[in-house]
Structure formats: C-alpha cells, structure tokens
Image (cartoon, rainbow, N blue to C red):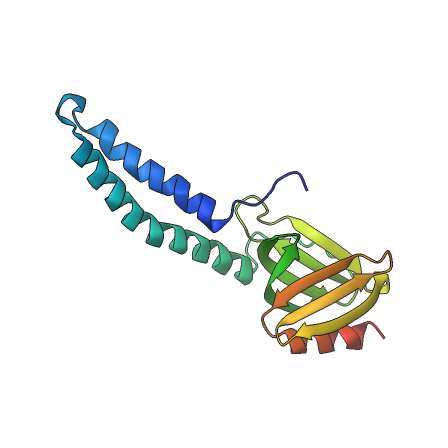
Amino acid sequence: MKNRPVNRITFYIVWTLVFTVIPIFSSRTEKLSFVDILIAFILSVIISIPVTNNFFKMLDRQALKGENTNLDLSAEEKLVLKASASLKRNMISLGGVLFLTNKHVQFVGTEFFSRNKKLFSLTLNQIAECELVKENRIMIKDNSGQKHTLAVDGASDFLSELKKLNK
C-alpha cells in the first residue's frame, strides 16, 4: 500500500509542534525568551493530548455509523454484519470497520490516510480457513495462503456468521 496510515504518535507530535509554533508567531519576537518558548511547548504538549484523542474518536465514530462508506455492493448482495476492527500488517495495526456481506468480507480503514479505503476484500469462496486466534482475534487465510489477522469487537459472533455463510 502506498499510503501508510498516520499513527496516533506521529499525529500527536505534529499537533504538539503546531501548538508550539502558533503562539511563537503570534507574539512579538523581540520580547520572546527561551522561557516563553518552553512554556508554549509545555502547554502545547498538554493541549495536544485531548485534541489528538478526540480527533481519532470522531473518525472512528463516523466510520462505525457507516457515513461516507461506499461498499460497492451488487444488487443481490446484503450487509450481514459490521464490526469495529483493526488489521495487523507487519508491525502496524490499522483501525477500521470489518463488513460481512452474503458474498464478501471487506475491511475498510478509518485511520487518517486509509480512511474509507478498502484495505482488503475477499469473496467468501476465496476464504480457505478462518479461526479464532485469541478471544478477540480472527485469522482469515485466503486461497493464496495470505493470512489476515484482525482484532474484532465481537470476534466470536463475527466468526460464527462468517462460517455460516462460508459453508
């Protein structure tokens, strides 16, 4: 994937710098001291925590409501189940929503750069195996041998519905 998602730490650091720079540029530079810059930095660190947290919560809430999410369902395809999930890719965990239809399993990202993008989509006949790895993790293996590991809210319910449809 070309666009890597901005993780929460990177986003937090950027907002901390933004909240540090704004007070510096909005004040008179001739009266600015090192102590003033340090105070601006400390305040920006404190302000950036709730801003970053609320921003990502808002993105997650909108994605779970299904607003602006285009699944490109065919006329005979129906949405069976939707769950909040995160997809593990290498060292990165990508937040998103896992959709189960009567023909597909689709994972749509909710992170900043992967927002509303299908990160994977498998037809039910492409799924070779699916199992519960831990109490909240599902592993889906496709016919090519690629494994998709997902942490899913209500993993056991999602897996049982998937197995019903995949018979």
